[in-house]
View 1 (tube, rainbow, N blue to C red):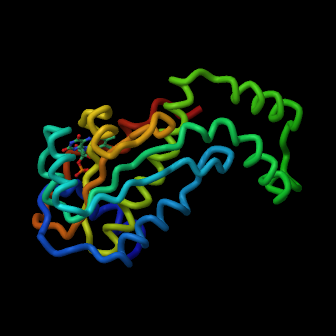
View 2 (view 1 turned 45 degrees about the horizontal axis):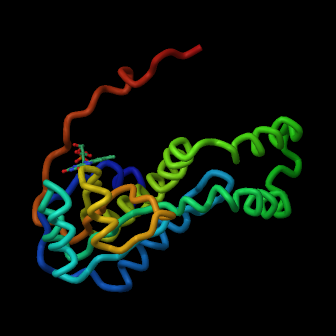
Length: 203
Ligand SMILES: Cc1cc2nc3c(=O)[nH]c(=O)nc-3n(C[C@H](O)[C@H](O)[C@H](O)COP(=O)(O)O)c2cc1C
């Protein structure tokens, strides 16, 4: 499908048909996530693919949005907090690949910024890494529409409960739940501000 049509047709889907989502499609969605950009190419996103009805039901106890249990697959979208310790490696890889060759960059400033950034606190790191995972999630969301599927970002859930249910260790930060399936609804576009409302100023 043409990209703008995918963007325009996407809706948060909260009612799903029972039809299963194939492994092939699951891999397509994960591949869309894999191709997302990430700061310093840290590639921080990790996913738990929840298909079993028993496990989906358990996840349903961790959120008021129990509709997620009716989706044939729920991606528990996470980021790997240890990525902050390997940023220098990723950066070296990028420099080796020549990303800045023939490009105007103040290398001294970039270097000292990168070093300082490695020292940011846990909360700031979590926010930064989560932002990267959010991009990967939206890649999946748009690819899902492209493949005739629907999904819904679900941020309203008890992270600690999900951590316990899935036995995830503390190096994994849980960002979002993403139920995916074939839509059993076709809602109209939700309210949006006009474009000029988004622009603070043009200078
Ligand atoms: C970060 C984020 C968190 C969200 N969390 C929830 C949620 O917990 N439960 C829910 O039903 N929808 C959730 N949504 C979906 C929004 O309600 C939805 O995107 C918004 O109402 C606009 O509707 P649309 O996606 O159909 O355009 C979330 C969306 C985003 C981007």
